[in-house]
Every structure is written in C-alpha cells, then in structure tokens.
Image (cartoon, rainbow, N blue to C red; front, side, top):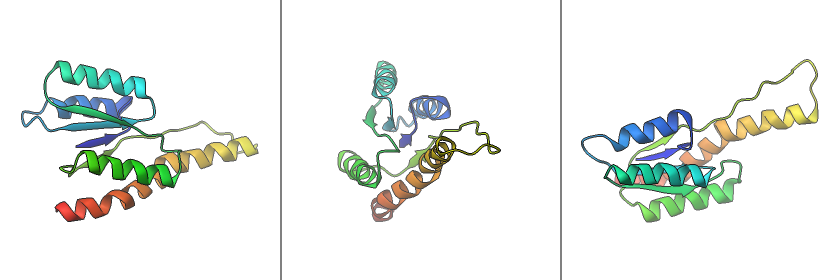
Length: 131
C-alpha cells in the first residue's frame, strides 16, 4: 500500500494505522520532506513489519512524477493500492488579485489535483496489469 502525502496529517495517521493491521502489509510512504519520512519509517520498523519511503515533491513536474511512479513500481512490484493524502491550502484575498495570489492558486491546483491525475496516469498501467 503506497501513501502519498505521509509526512503529516491524515496521510501520516493512515500510514501508522495501516502498518498496524493484522495482515501487516508493506507500507510505502512518500512525501516532500525526507526527514519526516525517515522518522515515520524508523517508527514503523521498530514496531515490526515493512515500511519503506520514497521522497517526491508533487510540484517537481511531470517527468519527476513519471520517474517516481516507475521507480516505485520497480521497487515494489506487488503494489496494488495507492492512497493520495497530500494537499495544500492557502488563504487568498480574491478582492486584490496579484501575481503572487495567482501563483498560490496555481500551486494549489498542481498539488491537489493536476499532480494526482498525472500520478494516476503513470501508475494505472501497472495497477491494471496486476488486476
């Protein structure tokens, strides 16, 4: 089970909870902050079971997202579930739009939507193949 956005919030909580399941699935955690991933993996390994991490920044662009998906499938050919738990939100003053405000909106759409659609596109052939 891969969890994208496991460095904080609901993604981190899901990683911990799924890792504790009686079936002891392999949990692959990913996110932007490697040090937070390392902490989570260390915690998971201390409790037994298999937890691994792969760092990815959803703002890195399509080529990096494709590489991330390919590397993940290569390292974990048994991967059959992906949970997308990443996201960002900004408080924006729509009455006074500026380039900075528009950049924040673009970042939100890239992180919360576009990058997820791209990752689904890159992972889908593998998921369809394994059924």
